[in-house]
Image 1 (spheres, rainbow, N blue to C red):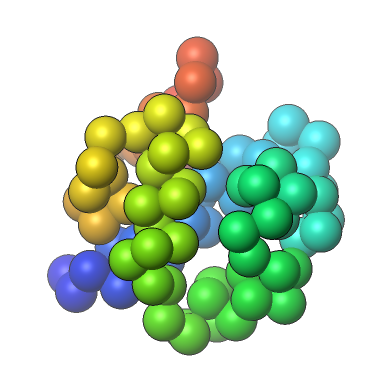
Image 2: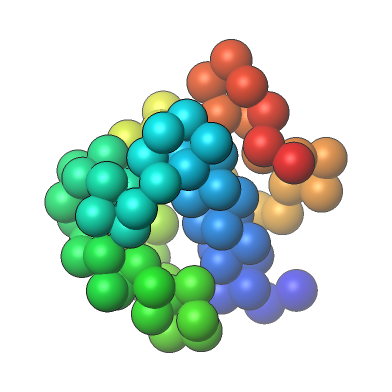
Length: 86
């Protein structure tokens, strides 16, 4: 699977988890991610726009993930804090 597709799957899982935790709008999700992205850009990335390496690295930092985590597949779900994203 290409790295963009992997990043997109991971981003989708992260945003799904955030929605379940009460961050249901793209605005709230962008704020949670530290305003490194706009709500419209989040939508564009989910729809197929490039997910830049710098943004992926920022998400890894915000979520306390190791470098390169966003570009790795997580077939058993994505761990997010004490929870697991399916």
